[in-house]
Length: 482
Ligand code: C2O
Ligand code: CU
Ligand code: CU
Image 1: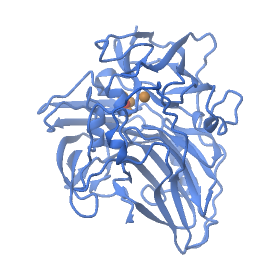
Image 2 (image 1 turned 30 degrees about the vertical axis):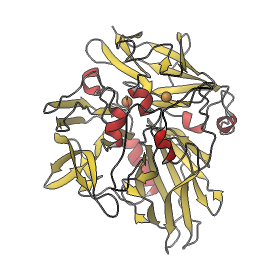
Image 3 (image 1 turned 180 degrees about the vertical axis):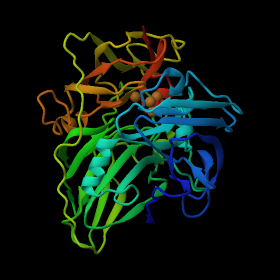
């Protein structure tokens, strides 16, 4: 067990106030991540006020400009995609705008999103899975007044009792390197790292903690719970992908699919000193119900923890301290609901032919990157996305706009039992989302508002955030016109 890496002043997870220009080079270099040998880490590296920064945690307030120049020294194409950000196409950093080896690209845009935990990562066609697995990902923390209020109310400080957790499934070989090969069905690892720490523990005091989790894994979905002895502790869910919910929701567990975020309060005031709490992924049915008879390339799965298997992720050690009870606030933030009356409905179907994954029969690489969907600027739409039963869970992600989940139908039991609403939504569906997990057999309805002020038409992506599916073309572009 090792102490969890915390946001700090240099190296990985350096906190960088990102309201002024920043240069980051994508490079491959040794990094001391694990006990023993160094790891060849692909990362965004730079220097800020004399400190070496690696995949920094960029901190910026709503309304400020983000100005990052990427220099590519990887020896292959790359990009920085600003996951969850409402930006124009040029700043979106998708695979449609690759940055060649030796070239540079300046991303510069005003932050228009709600406060929340977002992230940035590489997004080149065919190589997103490989590059993220090798390390090219970091956090983007957006702040605003409502969020500051919550911090003040709960006496939260980033890096002390408010802690970002980058949860990442990695296949690590005996030389301490990350191993990835392309063309797999889904990439599963043998270890879950948190903040680039293997088997981490965290010393905590008897008070409320704000834990802001990102699943930055290639393909693994977690069913997260904080276990005290053998019972899941109550958690206050306060936010998801697109920032704070309107009201606190009490939960005991949640599925966290690749790219999704969860913002929770964990109250340890009543836990006696000396106790251990385990952040665990509980066992679940992975529902990999692909068509029978299909032979999937899966050699690495022999080394990996199977999808849906229980796994310990991080332990919390409660130390001697005076208990400090602070009630969780009921009301959190204001949230605009997308008005969907009269909105046109568009249908999507997620399916496979045993070779590739498709969205409505469309595969990005097979169909030569044609643009199958056009929407109008300022239009509200409903997208109804149905996943076939002979399929897998797909975390579907939209670039450019956050959306709202309107309902779930035909959900499997393990999802339905988390819902308290007639429309089948779960507590984590109650905020703004950019990634929604759709289980086999399930239909999920989302509301989208394509309002924007960018000049001209914008082309974005809609894809599965299982990175191997994405790289194999379970991805389409859509254009916002007018
Ligand atoms: Cu986080 Cu298109 O990706
Ligand atoms: Cu994205
Ligand atoms: Cu998928």
